[in-house]
Length: 154
Image 1 (cartoon, rainbow, N blue to C red):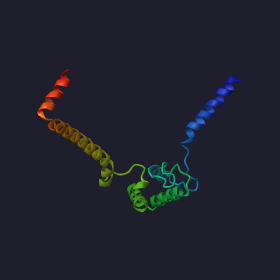
Image 2: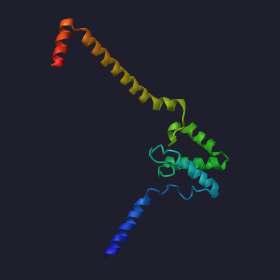
Image 3: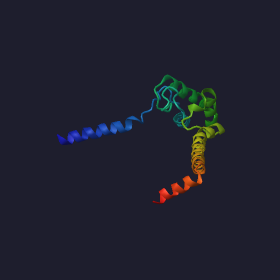
Image 4: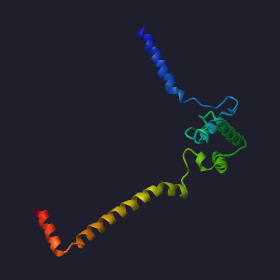
C-alpha cells in the first residue's frame, strides 16, 4: 500500500517536472528535413510570443505564435540563413520579439540610464550635504561658534 502511494507520488512529481518542457509545435508544422527542423526549433526558442510575452513561440499555444513558427519554417525552406530569418522577424515585429535583445546604442542607453541617474542623485546628495554643512558653520558668529564648540566638548 505504501509502495503504491510513493510510486504514484513519484510519477506525479516527474509529470510536473516535465510538463513545462512540452512544446506547442503541432505535427503539421514540423518540417520533414530534421536539420531544418532543428534550426527552426532553435530560432523559435529565441523568439518571444507577442501574446504571452514570457514564453517563446516554441512553447506558446497562441495563434500568433503558431503563425510565427510557420513563418520561421517558411523562411528556412526558402533558403534563408538563421540571421536572415531573425532579421526578417525583427523587421516585422520590432526588437521586442527577441527574448534576448541584441546589443545596440538604444539598449545601452536603456540599461545605462538608471545607473547614470543613481550616480547623479548620489552626487547631488553629497554636494547638498556639504553645502549645508559649510553654510551652517559660516552663518554662526564667532561667539556662537565658541559656545557651540564648548557644548560639544562637554
